[in-house]
Image (cartoon, rainbow, N blue to C red; front, side, top):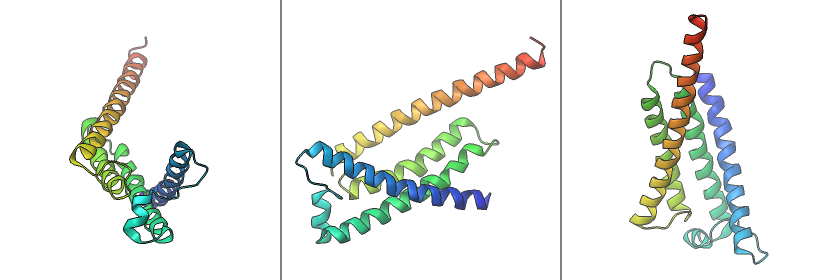
Length: 150
């Protein structure tokens, strides 16, 4: 299990950094002025330069990605209910993501901005939970059908 957590942390770290690049590309494309914005300009101001801001952003996204990657093993804890798995994974995803998104200016720096971000995450996790619930329910029904020779 420790090896799996370590591997998934590393994969998550790399995924977090890749996500940062994807966000930078999308933001740059949406701005539409032909420039590439490696980080949001307000974040550059916080660190006094683009290079420092990019380094800090990369580290933050890597750490958050590593946490989320490691948290993925929660889905394999069969002794936990689906609700408990979803709740624990939600907390291990939402807390680092919200903090990083706030620090990087990806969400508005206001109570409303943070609340809206959390509402969106809750909606995403509700959809994930419903999908996992109905998928598991279907698998159980198929197993029961096989056991009863139907």
